[in-house]
Length: 186
Image (cartoon, rainbow, N blue to C red; front, side):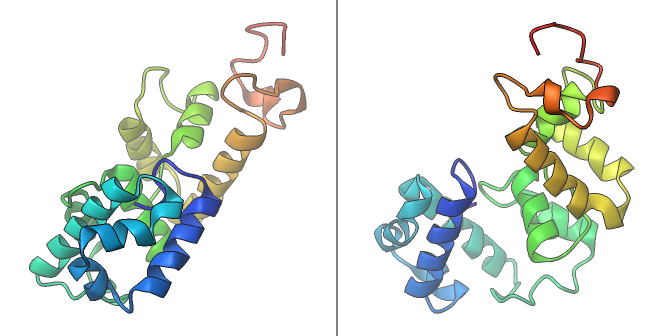
């Protein structure tokens, strides 16, 4: 949740501040909202994220799952997915990020960069939303390639296939891209 609507740098700073301020996840779940918001303020939207983080942690704990790093290790992928997306403030992208990055599970997060590149390359239909794009990648990308492809698509979307003026002239995927030739200004 800390990564929502902020940069990676600010997310990392907010996470480090949170971990310094609270000894464990139970302390975060029990923290007063103003204290939690102050702890994560460098990630932006502190008051909103504090409410969601605390509610999420309390929801996990109330379901009988302990709030520790090993809590989800034995839970099957599909059950864990359902548990995560049922939590307040957790959508498919956040659930997939938790599964891929924190639990090393084969799930494919789709952020704005991945979504834009997937549409431009014709990997998903032009009117696909992030949820349908995530489902398509989840179904079609081999488990052992999900992390690398996700990271490469993000990098490509940030550095080359940018939103406003894609840098098509330096794109290594130009030969595969159906958009090349649409305009001559690139």
